[in-house]
Length: 366
Image 1: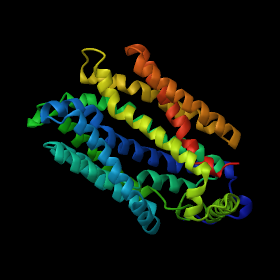
Image 2: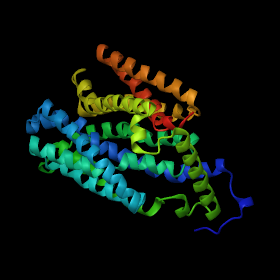
Image 3: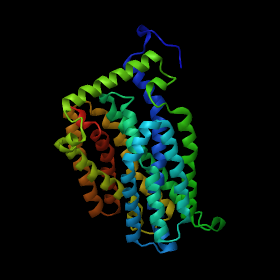
Image 4: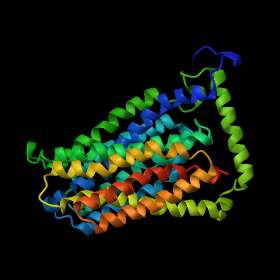
C-alpha cells in the first residue's frame, strides 16, 4: 500500500474516478468479452453441429435455453459466496471453470451431451455478470455507474465483433487433426478464460482499501462517500427488505424491460449467423464478418449514450428512445432484405447497450 497522503494532498474525486476507470474497467471488460464469446459461440457452430451431429434446430434452442436455466438458479448462491470470499477469488474461479467447460463443448456427441454441457456451463458462469455489477457499486458513485456499466457491457459488443469473425475463421480448420472446425472453435476459444483468470487474481482489488493505486485516505474517503450515498438511497426508497423490493412498481417495471431486452440480445446473438447464412452462398468467414457489423454499432451505442444519462429525466428519455429503436430495428431486420435487414439489426444493436446500463441505475435515481 502506498504511503498515506494527507487529506489536503488527496486527489479530487474526478481525478480518482479516471484512475479507477483506467485500472479496473479494462480487466472487467476483457473478462466479459471472453465470457460472452464462450456462451454464444454456439451461434456460429449451430449449422455445422446440425450437419455433423444431427442436432436439430429445436434441440439447439433447448440447449441454448438450458444454459440460462442453470445460470439463473445458480446466480444467488454464487453471489452470496462471492460476498464472503471476495470478488477477486470468485471471479477467478468462475473464469477457470467456464473456460474448461467451454472447451469441453468440443466433446459433444449428440443432443444429451449438448444439454448437459450447456447446463454445466451455466452453473460455472453464474454470478459473473451480477457480481461485476455489484462490484462496480463498490467503486463508483451513482452518477458514474451508468457509464461504468456501459463500458462493462461494451464487452458484449466486442465479443461479437471479435468472436464472430474468429469463429468463422476457426470453422475453416475442419478436418485438422481429425477434428471438426466447431470442435477447434470451442477448444481455442475456451482456453483464454483460464489465462485471464490469473490476471484477475493478480490485478483486481476486492475493494478500494485494497487498491495499491489509491492512498489509504483516498480509499477510505471513497468508501465512506459510497456508503453514505447507498444509505441515503435506501432510506429514500424505503425498500430495504426483499418484500418491499418485490412490491416496488418501478423495480418490477425495470425487471420487465430487462427481461424483454435480454430476449432481444440473445435472439440476435444465437440466430444472426444463421439468418445471414440465408442471404446467399457465403463462407463461414463471410458470415462471421457480416455478423460482426451490428455488434460494431452496439459498441458505438455503449460508448456514446450511457454517459448522457446523468439524471432521472435524461435516463427516462434515453430508455424510451432505445426501446423504440430496438423494436424498429428488429422489425426492419425481419421484413427487409439482406441490406435493409442488416441495417435494421444494426439499429437494434446500437440501442441494446444504450438501454441496459441505465436499467441498473434507474431505481436509485430521482
